Length: 449
Image (cartoon, rainbow, N blue to C red; front, side, top):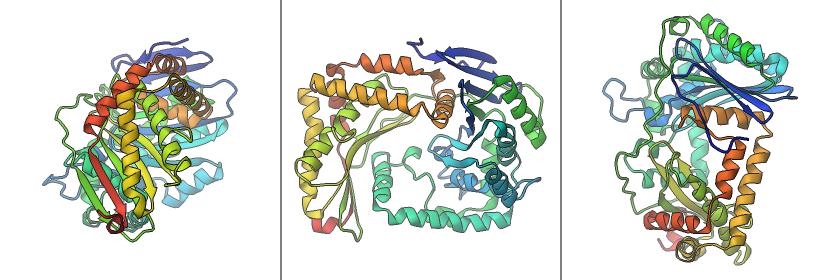
């Protein structure tokens, strides 16, 4: 049983730890590429992810060499499905479909991932396809222009969802002029201005063996998987086939260097039957020692039907259908927020209740019953999530790209069970001081703002 996190130093080329039945192993190849697996006994499938430690925060807002670089990370995510030297876009899609793969990609603020879940027998092919996409994409001009239109439609779809609009506005308002405050996909103006050359430059600058982490969980034999990955990477050629020794790329600096001063408010008038409310401010980073206490607080305040927000705003007063609290934690900054959607005439009342519940916890604390319920909710949800190989695969990658600490379920459970009511109250008190940002999107005029 692991009651402490398992450390994963970059300079150690081989690591192995027994996770009470499953086996975690990591191999660092001479070119700096990291391969991590979790072998799960009895599994008949596996989820594979090719992770690059680059996200939307790594784009330069003011870079004369790449003036249209904003949105490049997400643009790349689309383009790497559009053909390589050996496969067309259709052939890539057909190969995944032929084996019934569940494949996709995602762009986040601090990383990008290309992933596939397949039967155990199809792991070698999935590795080959993902490696081909990530390491040998052509990013041709014709595909670039076609995908520009697709991305603009994606942004238009998000702009029609006022909940999405509100959350984007909230990040921009809480983290003004900060790379983490920018929208992941860029804006329509960014995408319209993008040039193939600047996106290609972004690709060659950030995609390399040193920045690549290949993870797999499920029906995996580590030595065989390492061989599959090494062969597939070698076949890509170029820098990917370079045998010279190189260290893995350093992990991100996890210190918050500059104080964050959130803007007080942003109101966006849009035709709607509701007002989408977001209240909050700067939160905690992903390595903050209070993150377990924050998790418990978040559960008590806005987690599930028994959370205070849901009980006070929906169940007792019927003022909203959906309300919750949330945190976004990154290497050097974080946000904390409370969300609710309500009729315009109820906006002020909902804001007062939401703010009041956070202030109540900060001033008076939480009950032992609330504490135990939140701990049970978090521990149970984590245990259920780990039934899925995709969750386990992503956990490997986030540990490797993040702090270099792998938290086994037992270790996380021990930390959650050790959280006290006093610690929860202190975190709430810390957040109250900075939760002064209000974002409203919808029929704001009818709400009186």
